[in-house]
Image (tube, rainbow over all chains, first blue to last red; front, top):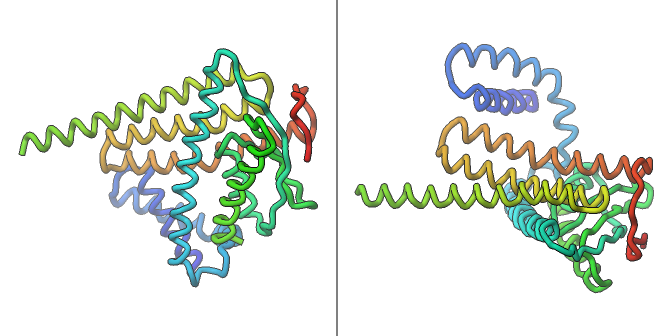
Length: 168
Length: 114
């Protein structure tokens, strides 16, 4: 019941945001639609969220979530700038390379979040995930030496540690 | 008081211009990258990072221009959707090509599996 109520409140809030105004007609229609949605999808929705150690230490995790979002946006803009520099170069200097990185993450949520991180940051692209060997296949746009590759792998491991602290 | 209001308005306008110029640069680089890069994967790099950074910059500019309103909230929701859907779409493209080899890959000498 708690899950359904929470889903109802979140969907109703989203409904008001999209409607752009608060009045009785919007509220009534929103209540009907959001109650149908919450009755149908609440159980499945909460199955997808797998926070590490449940929700008991959630306030502690807010710090990590904040850190993850800041790291994500910073790396995104840095990486976009590097790629855009390659796009405007007269003689492009990129050297693409495909590598694989092993992961210890178990849950599908954490694997997906880390794949998003890899796709958005430091000129890397998550091509595929091998579920048997638990490794990502990553395409890098500008890796010029083995040392640089190791450095970039270390940065991915830093994101890996942050993600592992939030979700299973 | 009017001086303070004018100053705040000017700072706001400055932020809007900075966000819009950054967004335009990234969106332009997406287009140039998609045309100039040699193979599918390098093009996907332009389609993921530059497009998202450009989109976020333009949305942030719109949010600053609009102030606190329902329109800003809508823009924030759209921004979150962009954050979630763009890498998924790019990953699906890359994964599909990697598994089915639909498009010929132009590997360089340094491309290898470790």
